[in-house]
Length: 268
Image (cartoon, rainbow, N blue to C red; front, side):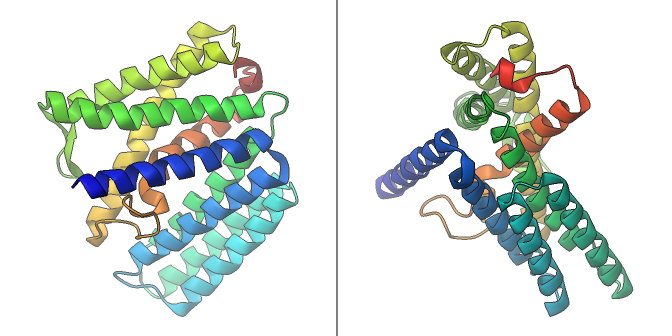
């Protein structure tokens, strides 16, 4: 047990330092990070849904779609990247429907691709793009940690027993409180003047992040999978580590697009 905890801690520290460094550097280095996470999300998603049925055509269409999306992201063409994702998802939807199968494959393309686009776009909002990402990290990481320890120490009624039997309302509220506090502290350290708005956004991102966690838990339970992969020592797969972050990043990006008066870079 101690060895497992040590392995998880070392893996988390190494990955955390690497991600923070690339986030601060930005530019091509950060786009490489975003594309790498996107491709791994796609790969792990398809591994999970392949437990029931996934043809070679599905893998081919999905793979080509992700490669086209990756090239668009690396060349800083977010609109083209979004169109690539949508086109690939449509082709997969038609293909799957013709064969009489479910639509988890096209959903996976959108899940991975939209994250890659949103992650890159948020970081690219200079001069405060890196600060926005840091605040999102602070909210999600604090939410995950506090939800885990709050749920274990307090216990109580289950949050969604049919989706994730171990999650409790106490864990949800602990994670929400921790995410808001840590997000505000991160914003204060970065010099944001908008504390009230920042608190609201941190709360929203924490809730959305926990929904993302439940979403991935439901997906794995549906397909009878414990971990998305064994890529990260002691942690499972990439999806297992960034499930909350995926939803939070996409939500933050959509919010910035739908609310023109909201300057996320200024808040960050």
